[in-house]
Image (cartoon, rainbow, N blue to C red; front, top):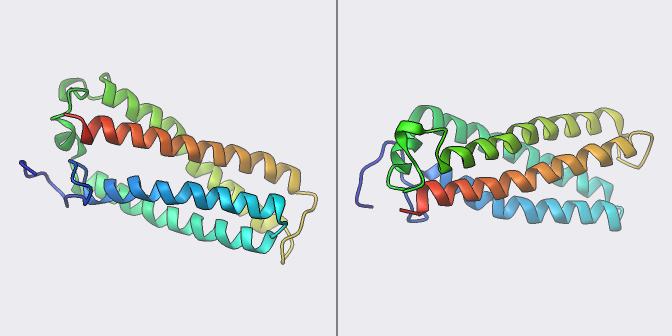
Length: 169
């Protein structure tokens, strides 16, 4: 890189920090695992494996999001890394293309995190052990579909923000 930025530089060769790069790449793994887990429960009726995959993903996402937020709030000044993008205006951080893309991303990311916690906690509380379909199944499917949709949109909007802020000059 031709500029020194606060925080640890990422590995993708962009202006992104290490945690920005980790989350950017991780979302490419999260979505196929999510799709596979849904396939397992819907078509293969492998409820226990679905549960294990979702718990593992939930824990990994919690750790990744926590590390990401610590990095963004305390170590990395993402705005400095975004300054070379012609889509970012430091004087109008929230009213430029990068700012709008971040706001749209947050409109999906925050509800997604809340939904995942609610869906997982409710599943753990309301499904028997080992898990099998029951009274909670319809609600679980409804809220889980919403959470999965939010997760897809979180990934897509996150990728758009990353490219606009840290790839394009």
